[in-house]
Image 1 (cartoon, helix red, strand yellow):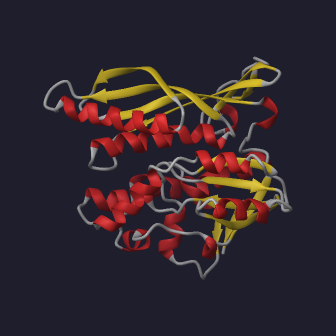
Image 2 (cartoon, rainbow, N blue to C red):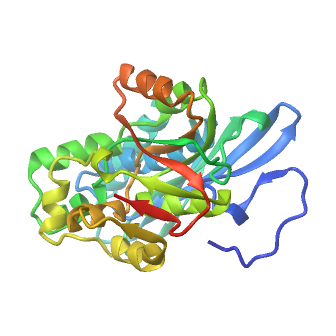
Length: 319
């Protein structure tokens, strides 16, 4: 989180690392600011081309979560110097480039190093109007919480590594991880969005905690309204829990209170680290139904999963 580092004094820095936002925002002019982010990781799917697509989708998501439009990217590559077919690297780069082109984002360079373990991702730059930036620390009591995409990519990826995920389950997770949040972000810009974040490695509850703590509010979440990817609940029940899920639970478990009726597998999936996950919006109560209708009308999976309340204990209550 790096919150122990000193605050920066540059007045052009609209959002830095001190609020644990998805990306940084730097103002260039009264009506123009840069959105900047970087993300890379090891393969979570078997096919190199698909891995490149997933990595690009994941990196672009941070810009969309700020209300921005990605314009350029630099690739980040770690690849073994020996023992690996260079065609694998070429396919990874091709997959990433295809997804960047779909986003209208130009790949203008990058950097690679020799690494025993494959790693790939991007540093992405976007544009946003300074008055229209979505931060994660500006939710308001009375807001409604709307979540896009289904949860469960972490447990499914873990099951895949163990050879225990069926082809249809993997296909559904892959489709989710290669679906850009571009259209979601564009639609949401027509509504009263008070705060936003994308759901990635910290899982739903840890990202929700960042929103609540930064905004000085608490959240109430209805787990029955949350959608999960096909096979995700079964993977959780069978114990395919990634290390990131366990770390998320250890990190914020004390901030969350579960109702007795919330099953163990559902609880685990709310901590599941997502790759290229959806967006969580804190939206004004008067616009919640309109936003939900607009998203679902565009065939984007979305659900109203809870509300923002005045600060109380616990920070997050899940029923």
